[in-house]
Amino acid sequence: MIKEVLSTGSRLIMWIWVGGTLTFNMPGDQTKMQHIFSRVGLHLPTWKFFAPTPATTDLVIMYRDLNRERDVITPWKAIDINRDRGRRIVWPPPGRDRKAYVDLAQELHTVFREFDGATPAVRETPIYALTVRHLRSLPAQSNLSEMREFMIVEAHTSIDSPTAVPIFISESFELTSDYPAATDRPESKAVPQ
Image 1 (cartoon, rainbow, N blue to C red):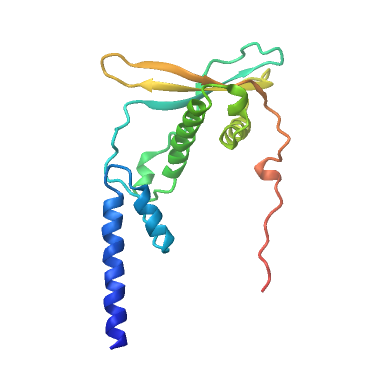
Image 2 (cartoon, rainbow, N blue to C red; image 1 turned 180 degrees about the vertical axis):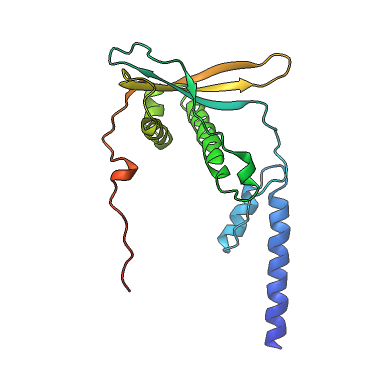
């Protein structure tokens, strides 16, 4: 008897959770429902089958090198994330760096919009620090390069009229870093059991 009650109760809770998940992922504001479910320990997963507004632009991170007097040394260059697509059929993990790049560009764009383009405020965010650290790790484009700056470009890839609009230009930063390079880090060792 107890086994049947527990079985029926767990099925009922599972169906309520499935129904709540389906309802929660419908358009509209379901924050009240999410709050009710989370109070009893049933967190509702969020997933969307289709984007409500499909992407119509690409965000590109570009950088250039400067000398100490901030004279331009090199032209703007996009971060190179192209990979051999043929290998990805057999071994897909190299595609993860492209996803990380897209997420980085989108997060920078979001932060820039949230701070209304206030560069000093944007500079204080972790995503900005992560971008600067990555750009410092890229090799200098010239022997005279001492500083670097980057920008986010919104590219509209329309067949009729392709355009590129700069939406954020960083302040220049030195190519040398106070942080140790990845190769300078001590190796991690297994903890004996």
